[in-house]
Image 1 (tube, rainbow, N blue to C red):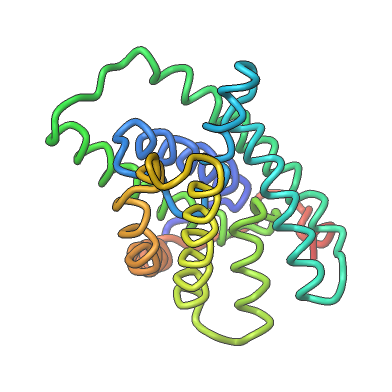
Image 2: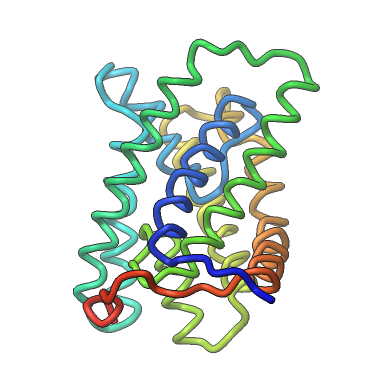
Length: 226
C-alpha cells in the first residue's frame, strides 16, 4: 500500500533539496548542474565587480529571462508564471543560505570532490522530481520542462535532457564571452556530463516515488494554480 506524500511538503522539500544539491556540486568544483551553469557563470563574473552579488541573485535574473522566453514559446503569459518567479526567489534564498553554511567546510581531494558531485547531482534530480509532483508552479527551469512536455506530448525526461543541453550550451557561450578561452574551465566536464545523463536519474526518481508514495493535496489550493 502506498503512503501519502502531501504535495505542499513536496514543494518545500524539493526546493531545499535542489538548493542543497546545487551547492554540493558547486563545492565539488567539477562544474555545477547545467541548468544552474549560466547563472553561475554570470554570478562569478558580476561578483568580481560587485562583492554583494550572490548566486541566488543571478538565478533571479536568469529565471526571469527563461519565463519571458517560455511565455513567447507558449504564446501566452499565465498567472502561474508569476508565482514561478516567487518560487525562484525562495530557491535563491535557500541557495544563498546553503552556500554560506557550506563555505567554511573544506572540500579537497578527488574522493571528497567526487562524492560531493555525485551526491549533489542525485539531490538535484530528486529535488526536481519532487517539484514536478506538486501543483505549485516550480522555478522557471522546471516549469519550462513541465510546460514544454505538456505542449509537445513527449516524455518528460527527454524534454529535460534537451533543455539541459541547451542550458549547457548557453553556459559555454557565456563563459567564453565573460572569461575568454583561457578560463573556459568555469564550465567543466561535470556540467557536460550532468547535461547528458541527468534525465535518467530524474526518470528513476520519478518511478521510485510513484511506486511507493501517492501524492495528495493537504490544502485546497490547487484550483488557484490550475
